[in-house]
Image (cartoon, rainbow, N blue to C red):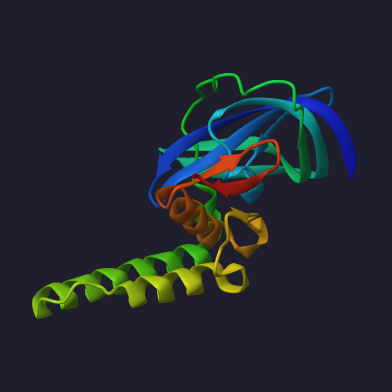
Length: 189
């Protein structure tokens, strides 16, 4: 592992499974693509700080009839400078959603979406709306040992990218905001 000063440009892209974040890390070692779950919580923008690089490796994928080859950095930690806010994100070309690389996770998401649609159709047909208890059960399953979430919550990006995004979206939709400097979610008063 190596710790290095740099800047990461984080962008949000609409993919097949919803919004996802990608980053471009610029440092003295070079420029690297970053597609770690750890950047999913950040708003788009450029952030300066110290980045602990765990691994650097080549990666390739096919998108829109093109083969994209990139040098990807895996981050172990991000320590942002506290004295500045994020600068606006710089636009870049088409990117592949990292979920596509993990076929088993993508299949699980699709199965969950189909199950939810079937449940919604069944509820509509029976005239029953999903209950608050069902919503609580869904949230407890989504957050696992973190449930019930308190006023302040730190998400674990190792739970899997799809689940991590669902947790992020749930918090965002329920009055939480991501505090970049502390890297946790805080309930708005």
